[in-house]
Length: 282
Image (spheres, rainbow, N blue to C red):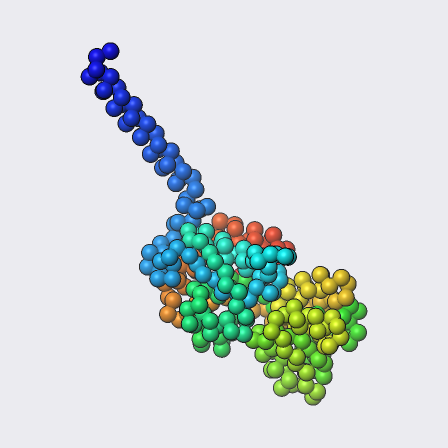
């Protein structure tokens, strides 16, 4: 075979191989959408995502919304799953920072993280400080000893009772407001975390625990028969992803990412996986 022909044939084979590799890479991009279907949302103008990471602040002690898998430092829960799905839609990585609920808004304001996702009910007072992207709707529940010895059925029945509640929550505010209509005030006992408040109820330090309804139901379910949740769900309100007032671009892409996971069914699947299909945003 003449040398010139052999050289020509070799060059052709190299070119063909390169074309096949390029085509294979192109196929992978089309199939995967860049990180599991993400990448369609333009985040180029979002300063918080310049590093390719969505940093999330969360009080990871509020099952089933956020908690650590037993014996690990791996966060789990409905909020965690939704946050991870949003990160996929944005085509970024995600990191969680465990932050006490009472200080979580101040921590967001000083840039400790990009967004708070922590079972936070949207209120007028909070909305004066930060902005929210609503994502689910949840009411408040009352946990009592099994058999409900005090016959507690709603807020009015908490007057004159000792109620354990987590600091900084909307439930604390609701109990304080309730005292305006009580002849005998609610004795509000405040704890740093909800599990501590539940333990106070379990050990007889209080008559009831007041928390978000899915959390109350979870606490009753895992109490070994010691506790039950009152059927009535009080004042359902939306939870929100919280961002700084200055994070307008981040707010916009979070809203877009949330809509994307609603449209593709991921959102409802996550709610179903946690047996909470009815808390979908109205």
